[in-house]
Image 1 (cartoon, rainbow, N blue to C red):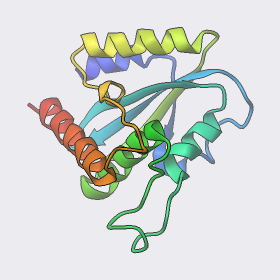
Image 2: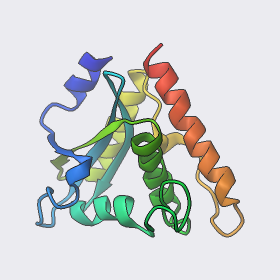
Image 3: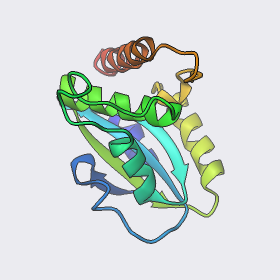
Image 4: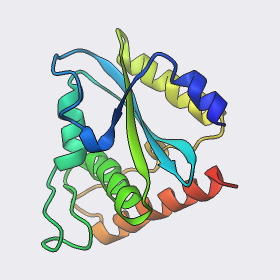
Length: 165
């Protein structure tokens, strides 16, 4: 699967998640991006997105509602009121802090970012990858935060098991 992933990410620039968003281009342009987890010597795509402000998008995932350890739980807190930010941010926190994964952000400029995002999601799914994009969203006003957090963790664990089977 690494060969397939590599071919689908040809032409993408790469930033280590630990250096984001500071290492990303500051100019505003349309982008398509993929968050890729590196765990136990293997890689798998976690999430595919599109944006016209890459630095801001990375910041939303990394810092949206973040609180220092100890104030809001075992390893941080991500804003529950923004469901996509919560899903992606919570998955990243879990994979980095609890599963010791490294995350890379693969990105490239795109003149038709939404179409490119849909195409990339489809191709990754056809290649057998499970993406966080497909995990059903929730209504933050009625959902139970801990239940949603557990579902995201279970999704990450399932994906890791399948990536290493």
